[in-house]
Image 1 (spheres, rainbow, N blue to C red):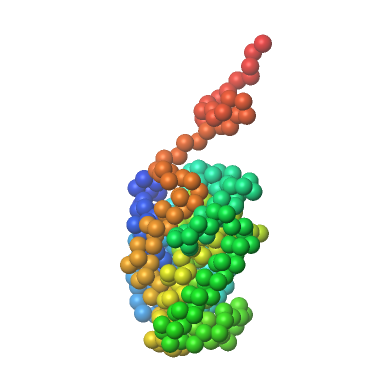
Image 2 (cartoon, helix red, strand yellow):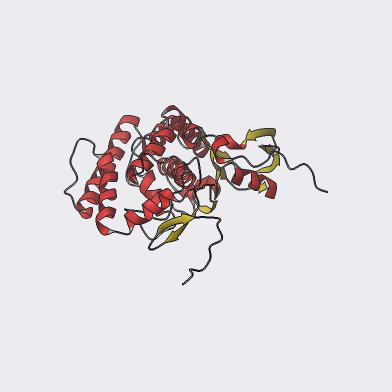
Amino acid sequence: MKTGFGAKKPELNELTRVKDRVSFLYLEHADIKRQDSALKVEDQQGIIFVPAAIINVLFLGPGVNITHRAMELIGNTSMAVVWIGEYGVRQYAHGRALNHSSTLIEKQAKLVSNKRTRVQVARKMYQMRFPHEDVSGLSMAELRGKEGSRIRNVYRQESKKSGVKWYRRQYKVDNFNDSSPINKALTEAHQCLYGLSYAVITALGASPALGFVHTGHDLSFVYDFADLYKAKYSIPIAFKVTAKYGDNDISDRVRLAMRDAFRNGQLLKQMVSDLKYLLNAQDFVSTTTIMSLWDDKEGLKKFGVQYHEFEE
């Protein structure tokens, strides 16, 4: 029997902007349905209602059942969805967030397809990590080495500050619990950062696959983008939480700490601004959609018009 279909699909300009939304919501062992414009989430502790238009990315962990109607609402409100394994170790699938403009992905494709402009964007990414140095003359190999040294130094500094011993980054994808507490915390923290990066990239209409540093993977640009923020967010938070709680509920505690850091640091606003900067699209505003027909000689032609053959 059919029931009410809830609120009508919102227009793009009616939705909450990406930078003003809650960064992410993680759910596991729950049933998710739709009630009007909210997600109805039910588990052993009870029922809550989540307004769909205020969440950027929804992480679905083990034991989640979600209805077709709920997924329809998620798609209509531009919420990204990522299906992940236990402890966030694996990303199994993702649902593309709604976007109506191809402006950013066209700019991104043009930049990544030319060796000169691709290097320029990559240098911009590295320059953001080294704001007080000029990296414009460094090769990609030199930039990789410089970044590797920076990250190793970040690990050493956070280890010294927190008192958590650090040896090296090591984890087993198939056995999360076999890692050390700090490596577990880092895995969980990085996953949160990847999810938020993915949500911003897709929601604005760019491609998660067209990376400038990483390449060959459908999430290459997500890894590019997330690497900009690891030294400020995921790495220090992982060490801080591990120092305070050890191996006690490390996954849940890291997720909560990352959520709070995203909100307090206004990372979403920063990500939106940074993405536009990297793709040379600072003035881009995705509020309207203009569909056109492409012509190699006459440029863009009006869409929705019945054209006729030229007469002799």
